[in-house]
Every structure is written in structure tokens, then in C-alpha cells.
Length: 91
Image (cartoon, rainbow, N blue to C red; front, side, top):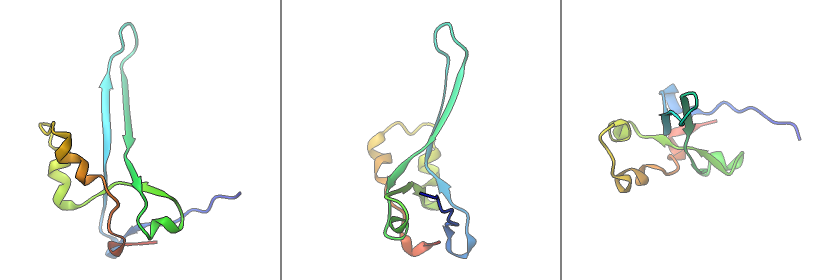
């Protein structure tokens, strides 16, 4: 099966931010490791036409909360990990 690329963006070309995690750790006796990942969620109805999941797109109102290095309460962050509104996106 041949893969098909898609151009997915916010309407009006606004930038978007994906929720991700970054970690630096040093294993005992090993070289330091930097790693990162993008968090995914079930697809909204727009993205669901091409895949069953999508990256978590953060609302600009949630940037500060997601990026706050002092935020350690996962119960406050979990509600941010949801499909983004398809009404604000286009393919």
C-alpha cells in the first residue's frame, strides 16, 4: 500500500503547537541520553478520514500550563490531551 502525504494545518495558516515530552537522563555507566516524543490522541472527525489518531494540538490558552516547569499535577494536564476541534483545521 502506497502512503499518501497530506498537508494539515490550522485555518488561516495560524501556527500550532503539539504536546510533547522531553527528557535528559544519564544511565549508570553510560552516555547521557536526550529523548523526546509527541503525544497522540484519538483522531477528530477530520483527521479520522485518514488516520485513527493524531498529535495532541494545544490551544494557545493552554501553552503556559503545558510548558510550566513547576506544573507537577498530572490531573491538571490530562484534560489537555484530547483531539483538537476539527472546525479550526483543514486538510
